[in-house]
Image 1 (spheres, rainbow, N blue to C red):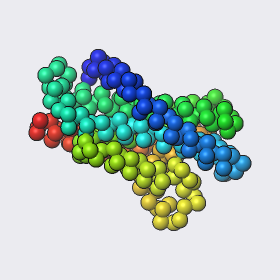
Image 2: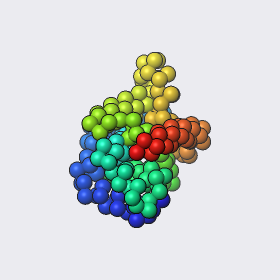
Image 3: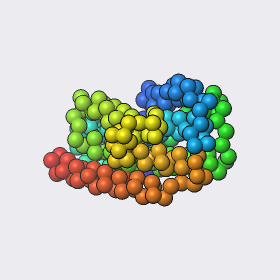
Image 4: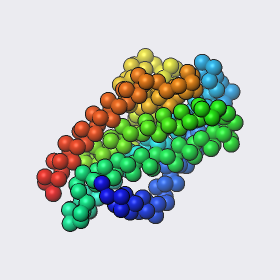
Length: 243
């Protein structure tokens, strides 16, 4: 992968400030609403504000990662992938660059939600727990970055945004990022365990409850990430053969 290409992609993203700001504001506003409602509640000894904060931060990171990967559909429609064939950039470097860009874009929503949690909701965690929550939340964006690549290669330019939006909304709703899985109906609780969003929540919230990251949840997320990456690679190769 070309570092120059990745740098240009980052600069191009920063020029589109509306996208960056939107991915930061949406989870922050939702956190203010739901976090304020549940501020006085506790879940197994964990404050409702910190519980909701981690969930909303994950939602922002997830939606940012999926949406960034989904831009591949727009670039395919514009013929950008064919133009890149004329450069020294190898085809695999393009997909890898998008994957890394998705992970970078997942950071601002996390930080914005944490700041809201601290400044507006009074969330207080030890330095060690903060570090684990941040690391777990950020790494949990990996399967969603891979999912964004899959969407980017199967969706059409005019439909990629509504498809991406519907997918991350459903994942957040059924994965327990907005409301605790424990209070969901039985059917929804069963569905939740089959979503990567549920396991992302288990990874990120593990330090709140147990003071450490869940190795089991990390393993499940890695399976999701590898599986989606393999699908994305197959779609990438098929798209490359047609171009």
